[in-house]
Length: 103
Length: 533
Image (cartoon, rainbow over all chains, first blue to last red):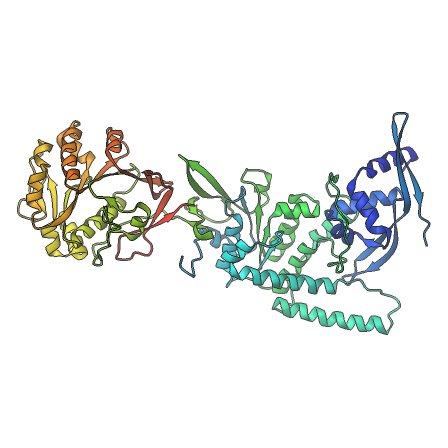
């Protein structure tokens, strides 16, 4: 995603409570999307879309992929940012990230 | 309430699900119209023919468990199955397969057998999951799902147990597993409600319905019923094989519930509209009866008068609703034009039989023509020959029956004041006890004595009242003097037809509608009054 569009999308996401819940839930330990749906009380299809968008923006990253007994792949995501800042300057919103280095 | 009372479900719906192949049904209605009750009753009725799975998004519902005691046990069982399934879908590492992994796989095999045992069958067939896999794939890729923005904040809490890791749509996947485990038997799946499930998943209702229609209904012969939280017609009506709509309306402040069979594909529907009641928490459709008073009747047992101020109607159920008929009072019984005479006859016969059984006198100017031979046979069965002869006097100005029936008195038919003269009638009933009952068919009185009969009739009415007797006036709804008669009456009741189903209601005092249930009265003609609630 181009930088300007990414910043705008990230700013929009910061106002989204679902994104906030996902970041909190994945900060200390990796979670699958099914787990996030239940823990954060987000409809499953919405959770998939939100996580996909957050991954594109670098807010979360996939840290592991396991296989369930029916052969399905289950991805686990971790929070990828230490802090996020939203600012309004010269008539525009913008967001800045402080990324977490992968271990 | 009888312990095993299960309500009554339209037989058309049962036949719909019993017919070959899988079928899908939408049960639509606003909140509180009885959708869940209907769905659970369908499960009950079909329980011995097909296994079921009630998929509910409710947390728990004590009121439902009270009405359907088996539901709590089934919910618990489904929870066990869900946990068992979650155990099976626990993630596992594939490589390297060390001793621990092999041990875990062994445990999984055992758990799988347990799941099969819990679901009760060891069916070898499989269910088609094409559409379900397609749906899950599209959810995973983010192709579908609403653009939803959370507008409130909530605490994120950690749960110690997380279920269904690996399952994207765990409720649906469990349904598929159960359908598969039940094969080759057909499963009856209820989704209550499709709106809640769609919201829970964040996907459109029609997508879930299309998925189940193609995989389960069409490919696996499953019966599916969806509870939908609206009564409005919409595009979803095209997705199901059948649509039933539940309505809750008001007429003059009285509740009317109607069940409408909008569509039942492949089935002939003779009756598409049913009034119904939710009395005692069960849905019961109210049949339209082809009532016929039999000649072979059981002896009427006298019913105790409710109190000193009133006499019994002869019907315990009716007495409990109305409180009996007031002594020294006037009761107007209004009869709708589309109400069969047999219903009025049933009320009349029981009222007269009760009076005669107590050796009391009855004067009767019938609303409709009577076959005296049939009436004689019926009344002899109900009240006995002696009570009939001494207590009943039917006033007839038309037929030449002098001496043929001792309970028929010929009258001139030109002067109502003379023919209904109180002292004359009291003399005719001298061997009967009081209070007397005067039962007057007003439309017939007008036909006999002219349109000004009211004034003359009122003279008789006043005399009866003064002496503490009871007057019941019957008039059709089209009678021109209905308002004046209603004004005279302490009690005003109305018999009317709701789409062919006959009901009774109190105009004065005001009551709800009551269905006349003759079902339990074989040989008896005193209906139970079933409230339309």
